[in-house]
Image (tube, rainbow, N blue to C red):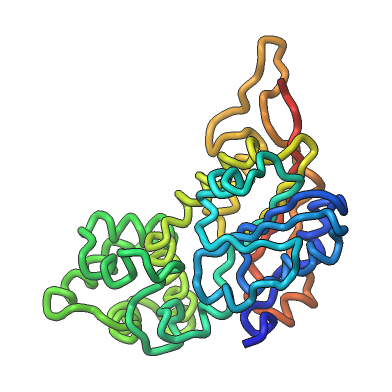
Length: 304
């Protein structure tokens, strides 16, 4: 499978431009996927430049780029600093992150990410992880299922859906996507069901892969890993992610007010660069998965 078929990169030009690439700099693409963003970064690097990429999905290895300036690290980007230190790298000049699920993961039925295919409930980004969608749907307590559907899918009738799932699994384990779809479908009209199913699957996927916890761990490491004036270019796809990114760039925290020193100067590691960027109408028409994308760019500053 070619990288282009594996995944169509979103906001490619804008996100890479946001890095303000220096030819001899060191850069990190923490969500390698099909390698589209990485290839665009390498195109702007000189002979002495270096690009590290992270991806925990073993399927992404097939897209590894044969280039002396490139190195793929098969690990979750929550371990960003540790793996860079292992490679002898303390500071980098730019970090790019695209938090979307790859087209490949959606389109391979047996991964269980999509509502469209009959498949076992899975949704693990890393197939070696112990907990998949099956464990969440069949073993989580009612209060946890309600939390996932309410907070991650942002659906008001989370309690009703959670209790319907529990009642169904008491009769027999819920093993497949079609079984889960059948339980959820009666709660919504025909016009809304596809959208609601997608949101519930997204919620389960977030829980399975600890996506918000991973995002927080990653963002907290970026001020230490980025050199002063280094750039952070982040693409998120739902309000939960974007809110964390926006707050962290603004205040260096995920909630609360900006901390200030004795003289009233903000103590923040980043300043935002430009305004929020969203895909053009043309990109949305070419790639439906781009529609919810939001790009935020920030520059590392020295506030000490």
